[in-house]
Amino acid sequence: MRLFAAVVPPEEVTAHLDDFLDVRREVARHWRWALPEQWHLTLAFAAEAPERVLDDVEERLAAAAGRRQPFEVRISGGGAFPHVADAKVLWAGVRAAEAEAPVDALGELDLLATGARAALAKAGAQVDGQRFRPHVTLARLGHPEELSNWVKLLGAYEGPAWRVDTLTLVRSHLGEGPRRTPRYETVAEFPLG
Image 1 (cartoon, rainbow, N blue to C red):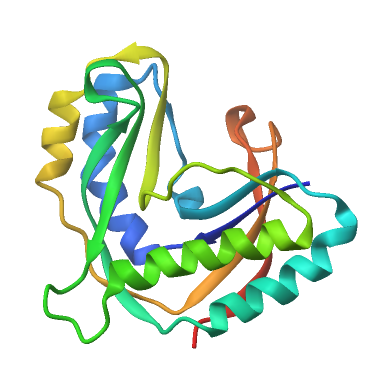
Image 2 (cartoon, rainbow, N blue to C red):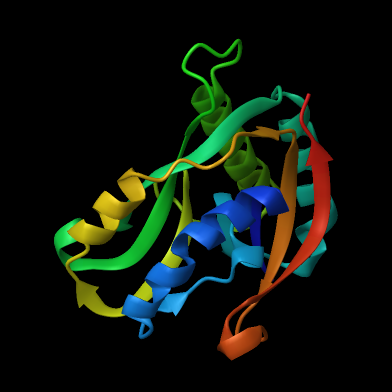
């Protein structure tokens, strides 16, 4: 199985970003734009997880989510991987909803990602070891391109705030979605706190 633990923004948040990008996508039709209903923040990714570990993964993710408290964030800004000058991925950033919030939102998000990675790994899944950088993947490019204008455009974007109170476990089915994109199946949701 391909599994990932994620924070999934509510529909009003994705609709706001989708509206912002709507007319702008026309300029880059050749990119593989992610579908708004699939936008998420990946906290931990396992390209291969044996079916037999699923119950253990769920139990460990429930415990990891239970150790974190809810927090508020918003989609704001953006960037490109690996670099703006030769990018293959365009993404939107995530920041705390308020500078003076009672809970350190990005700290909680980082700890939630750490807990999710540990949960998957301890259950026996092969976890991607890349450093966690909170983002929502918007588009993938077939060939590297210079994206500084897109990053500037996203720099002006600030979406509505939302309360993160759930960790979601998702199974990815490659090539089974529209236009041969992955199809995502929510396996379980775990409340924070």
